[in-house]
Structure formats: structure tokens, C-alpha cells
Amino acid sequence: MFSCTEKEKRTHVEIKENQFYINGDLTYKDRYWNGHKVEGLLMNSRMVQGIYDDLNPQSVDRFKYPDTGEWDPNRNTNEFIAAMEAWKNHGMMAFTLNLQGGSPMGYGNKNSINSTFKPDGGLRPAYMERLEKVLEKADELEMVVILGYFYFGQDHVLKDETAVIKGVDNITNWILEKGYKNILVEIANEVDYPRYDHPILDVARVHELVARVKNTEKNGNRLLVSTSFRGGRLPSEKVVDVADFILIHGNKVENPNDITTLVEKVRSMKGYSNQPILFNEDDHFNFDAESNNMVNAVKAYVSWGYFDFRKEGEAFENGFQTVPVSWGINSERKKSFFNKLKEITGY
Image (cartoon, rainbow, N blue to C red; front, side):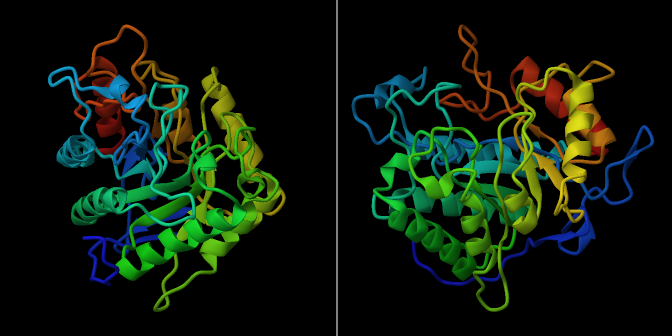
């Protein structure tokens, strides 16, 4: 499966002005919710552990499944894929996946090694096989994958900047050679977080990689690309200048009114040219309340992404980031999000 052969795909994501299109049609076409336009948005969830593994034998035992007492990366991906149709049926058009995952303990890596990239920037075949399975299912379901390349706490796996650039080129060319057109690239998660080992992934220089991906073409096709910033923070002007869409986070934004303010600030930035704005991480819930971060994002006409991890003492069913993950819609928080999503999107 890890061969680079192009195959015609069914799902194509496009951006026109500040709206998303899938296969030539506006997402959620003609949909309004309580008088607020939904068509053209890309509602999503952070599902970054879909191809997760821990390559450190000293820490992998932390991720045993409760029913088997063993960790199994293939089970993780297979169960992820089995859950995807239910997500889509509730109106979730996209999800964020990351080639280096996210903090598997909710917050904090704690010596885990999880990287699709080898130290020299090569691609690990086992990870790529799992990735291809997920991308194939997303293509079948007409879903968009927000594919993160790097995650802080894992970028140190790559030995130097040359390896980082090689890694970017390798995965970008692989996607284009495979013919996937349902990908939005997130170069790195929260680049203004001071934990990246390689300066080219820091906020001052990450626009170089955004531009590099943007300028890579095959058969007239290229990938849409951006990078994300910490909760409540504005993107850099250099990223805004080159990004196809603007990624922001709602973590630490406790007052839903501040979501509105954050969006207004982005739209007033120098260089902003009406790109769609997309939250792909927000750990605030309260979905039954009249005002919450998700609702205020929709009212501001920006896409919103759910971020949920299993909190200390919670049952296995809770959270989509803490490993091992139960990928079903089977906790009260998950049900609350997906029910609100279904209401807003009209699915």
C-alpha cells in the first residue's frame, strides 16, 4: 500500500473567497441556522491520534486497551475508520489528523515517540499504510482531512532543519502523487508555542514551509495550506500573507464573546484577504447554553472544531485525544457536541 501511484479520487475540497466547497458545491448548501449562514463552513473535530503509535518501548504500556491489556496501533486506526461515517452523519465535514499526533495523555507527551517521519525526514511505512486507509475512507465519505505535519514535543525526532524540509517535501509529494484532493495542510500545531526544536517550525519562520507546500504542484494540482496558533492568539502577518485559510484555536477563550472579538481582529489584520477562518481546536463545551464558543463561531461565520480529551478519573469512552481512544459517539460530552452539530448543520 505504500506505493506512490496516482489514482482518481472522488472528493475535492476548494476555497472560493471565504467559503469551502466540496466537489464543486458549497458545504451545507442553503443551510441557515437561527438566521445565521452555515453554508460554506467546515465544521470539524480534532481527531489527531487516528494513526497513533508509541515507538518508545518504555512508555507504550501506558496505552493498553482496557479490554485486552495491550496497545494495538492497527486496532486504533481500524476503529477510527469504523466511526467516521457516524461523524459525517451528524454533519461533521472534516477532522484534524496529525502525522505526529498530539499529547496522548490529554496534555503532555511524557517520553512517547510518535512520528510518521524518520530522523532523516523519510516516511515510516507502517504509519503511511494507516494514513492511506484513513484518507481512502475520507475520500469515500466525501470528508475533508485537515492534515497536520508536525507537533511540538515530537519534532525533535527529525535530526535537523534539512530533515524537516525533506519531510515536508516527502509527504506533500506523496499526497499529490496519490491524487488526494480532500486535504487541507496544517504545517504544525500551535507554532507560537515555544517547544519546537527546529526554528523553521517556529512562528518567525513557519511561513517558509507554508509557501513551500503552496508552491509544490503536480499535474496542475497543489495543496491548500496554513498553520495554527495557540488559543486566543492571532496568526502572524507573514502567515496571513501566504495561507490559503486561517487556523486559530479557542483554547483559553473562556468568554464566548471573546471568540467574536478574536475573529474580528483576524479580519482586520494587515494582509488578510478574505480567507476562510477555521477553528480546529477548542476545548470549551457547554453546548446546551444559548452562548458558547461553538455557537459564537458560527454566528461570526467561521468554522469550528471540537477538542476533547479524557480527563483524570473519566471512563474510557471519554475524549478523542487521550490514548487509547474510543472513537464512537459514546460519552455525554461527545453526544452533546454531535447533537448540537446536527442541529446547526441540519443533518
